[in-house]
Length: 369
Image (cartoon, rainbow, N blue to C red; front, top):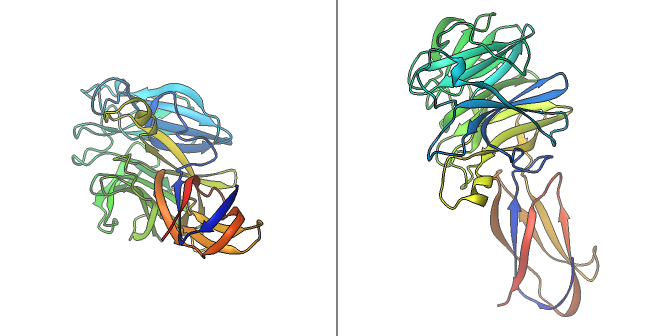
């Protein structure tokens, strides 16, 4: 950017935007409304299981689960409906296909699905990640309370599997090796983070146990905690993404794939393009994350800085704007900084510094005293 400027004033203002964006254009699914991302890596492919907001209806109308696959995190193949509430003969409702997760064990694929109205959490099984999925037990796997939603599964290195779920409490239980029954008592986790709301996602990486979750509503961001054990205690570590004012809810899904780490979430970006009134029509988004040496997470929406130079790209610096963020998502903000006063006509250069994707830059101006 090069402009002739005469008498630079005392305050420089810019509008910047910190996108919730990864390698692909966000939202990554733009042909249907999707939410509650549940990614699974298998055979060098990412299998993304999602809930599905129907186009009609005013509130949550969710009758089935969808599947998308990718080998580059940019292009996603739509495999349509992979399972639905109709696969559970004991469920008396045709609405309420909420956040699922699919996990592989012993060359089978187990899909854990919450049912509406306190009916419980069911499980489906298939020989392939594409389905067809069938109900192996014909009844709820979990029927504990009205909080039985948002299941997530961790299989530890010793082979013990754990099922976690719940809103606003966090529960867990030890699954048996068959993955369709459990042993021991259901535990109401006492050390869940104070801002835990729902949508747990539990994983292990380099000896650290992680619990990501949708934070206190509303809007919901994505927070996370760490532990030395799959059963806690959990220590809150911070936010992967702050609550986005355009999205009342959220749900994390986190994976490592081909040398990179990713967090999935959702917002209402496509809805906002087509409707002025709010409906539950969500769209899944994708972002890169990285890890510090101690295992803590760095969200890639970390901003950067703008240096204002005169006369040449490495000329005198009039001022510097630090663009800092706590991963607010795709929100615009105006940032100001004082600048040095100079006179006469000069070329003006903006130099952007940082790592990975920085931010979107919309407009700038000088304010005069």
